[in-house]
Amino acid sequence: MTDSAIHNRIAVLRADRGISRRQLSEDLGIHYQTVGYLERGEYAPSLALALRIARYFDVPVESIFSLEEFPPLL
Image (cartoon, rainbow, N blue to C red; front, side):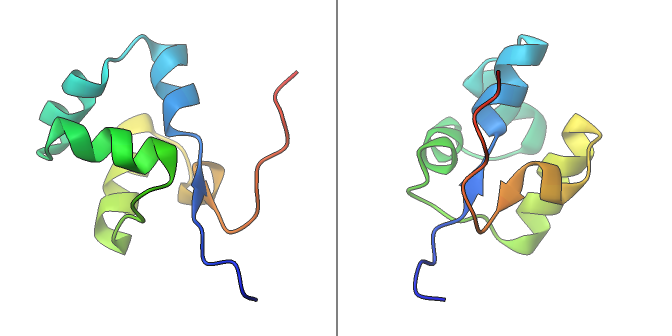
């Protein structure tokens, strides 16, 4: 495997629940710009942060993060 990108659905989950980047960052205790970096795939979260994000949205971590691109939502 040569592609080390971590794909995620953070923006989709935020939009679905009406949560701003700033609110998510405050609730997780991280800088608000970190949320943007994560959403754009410019930053891969630590395992601890990925698990905290999954717990925050109350979904399995693999439904948010993947080594492969997620299929488009229709």
